[in-house]
Amino acid sequence: MNLKYSSILLILHIVFVANFGFAQTNEIKIKFIGNCGLYISDGTTNVYTDFPYKSGAHNYMEFDSAELDSIKENSIFIFTHKHADHYSAKEIKKVIKEKNGRKYGSWNIEELKSLEESIPNFSIQAFKTSHKFSLNHYSYLITWHDKKIFLSGDTESAETISTIENMDWAFIPYWILIDAKENDIEIDTKMYGIYHLATVQIPSAKENWDDLENYQPLIKQGQIIKIAY
Image (cartoon, rainbow, N blue to C red):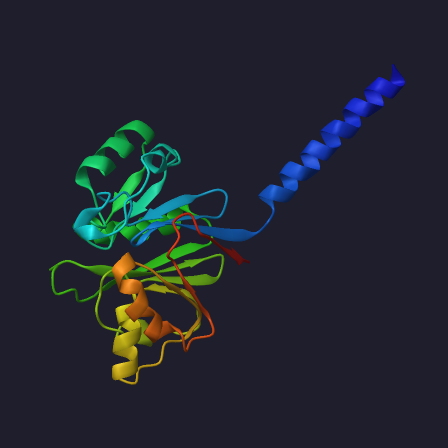
């Protein structure tokens, strides 16, 4: 009986240590969903950026319907603008109805600051940025557990991102790299995530990132980036 009891205690101890270790990994995990769609989590709070969008819109990436089913309860959804390859009114309405959550974008940009009150070690800055096909486009700088993560969305200019110092990750489309090169603009980031790539764009895009050492092209959906803190 004592042996059996000891075995049970040992198993419970192992399970506890394993679960505690997972919870205490101290990392921000970023999953690439498609286009500019990212799932960002510190294991407690779940944030989706530019997702859900309309799958396959404008000949950009499609996504499996299971991606919608996997959305976490009570998540936060942040959108750069309302183009269909970044935003789906139909899908976000359905997701929030079924799983709750809060959505933010140009329509309630001032309310973003309220997130700092409800999420520990989190702040967000919104930058009104240019996108010739949208009158209301925003880029964001998220600072979470002292890690700076920039999300450019579809903006064409590197001007805004060049004003931000000591970023850990800058998620940008390849045309930001082109603009930075052409205008001799420096971007202060440890790592680049090159996103919003259609398959036909990859060959020409590679010409603009191949001379970088600190980049990760987001081509394969489901790619995971981990930022330790």
